[in-house]
Image 1 (cartoon, rainbow, N blue to C red):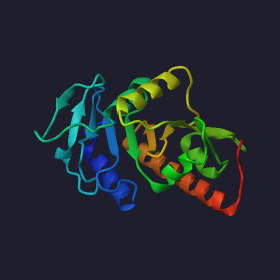
Image 2: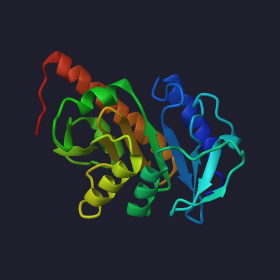
Image 3: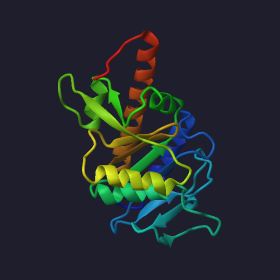
Length: 208
């Protein structure tokens, strides 16, 4: 993979326009061939990113390249490190903050969100008829490394049904083999969340 920053800029602008990365919320990253990764710098407005608004990080958290002395790695870098360490096939990790993601995270009080058996699941790798699939849900903490550690502890023994996780009252994180695939995963996850909200409003129940 060549320098992925242009792909990250394109995705961030699209997500910003959709309201999923309002203000400076959210963070995107993509790996380089040496397993380091470029990640959005903290506090950057996601609709106006340029190539200097990223920091290159090693899998152990060391800053390897920083185009601007004002840049600091995203506050959620530890979550990206966790995903890349758990899933070596992942080459991109995207995290966005939508209203629907926050709403659906409150529809359940346990650690799994049941997903509706709709066609969009195919885009997340589920090719079954009437599948019973769940998205992992994690509690939100001000200390982000605590969230990352919980992700590592849960996923080191169990593989999630889909390449995505939800942080309660926070947002969705997806991972994929390429930035383009990660962009698709975000769009599919957000479509599913909108469906869940609409189904709840319509009185439909698809709890597994």
